[in-house]
Amino acid sequence: MSDLDHLNDNRVEKALIFLSSTDEEHAELSGEVKRLEERLKQVKAHLFLKSDGSVASREAEALRSPQYDEAVQEWIEAFKQFKMLDNKRLREIRITEIWQTLSVNRRKGNI
Image (cartoon, rainbow, N blue to C red; front, side, top):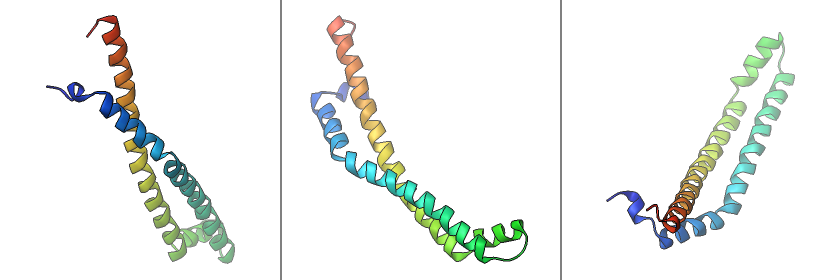
């Protein structure tokens, strides 16, 4: 028995409920990732401007700073949370798409 044999109306309903219940969280996490990407740029620019020396040494100093590292770690955590939810949502979307295909084929008598 394949996993497709377990695909029924209840499973598809569960997928749709999950998708609708996570729309806002998905958008918020996506926005947080974008916000933290901008924060990375701001932290780097701020540290760059405070440094002395050549452009290369100022950039290197900014990138190795504890403040930049902290910003990177925040971004990584937010991105990880976003991708975990995004992957779950994509799985549920695939379930609904497979269900649609199977339903069409059943109506046509192909399954």
